[in-house]
Image (cartoon, rainbow, N blue to C red; front, side, top):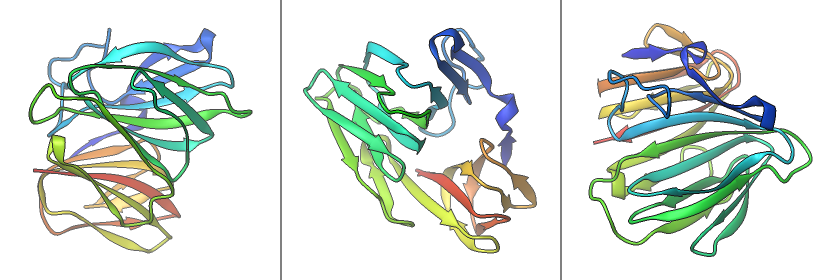
Length: 216
């Protein structure tokens, strides 16, 4: 298990424009050949947008983009005609496939924080697609078969436990609160990269929210 702390993330974004980004993997000008991916995950970005701030239209291709809103409202528009407002509890997925352009903005009244995870597809190309699952229930797995991956959203109370799926690769990201995992205490923004995960449990030290990727 390789634990990466929140304060070890690469700092990015454009603070003058109301955008603060923290990257868990090699990203943009923060190139690190030893930190390019883990399993299918090639990016896990924490984004903070001030009201009115956002990312203007930009392209993606050959990437599965899954977004989890921590607080606030994320407005999404893309070149295939989809427009959505995504809130906490919703899972948003944009399958960029052969190519798509999109806009992400904070058009809400308060600050916006979201975690965006990029996964490499098993096969490139195809047609782009978009989906939002509103108010996903605790412990309901969300499959991304294009990347051979499954997302598990877990909300724990203090003292409550959840199994980490047995998998070739498991990526555990703490959204909020504090958990204990295999002898390590993880706080908000911390992540664990686990190879050949087997028989592991995470325990809430406080009320906590976790995103767990199970990858083949």
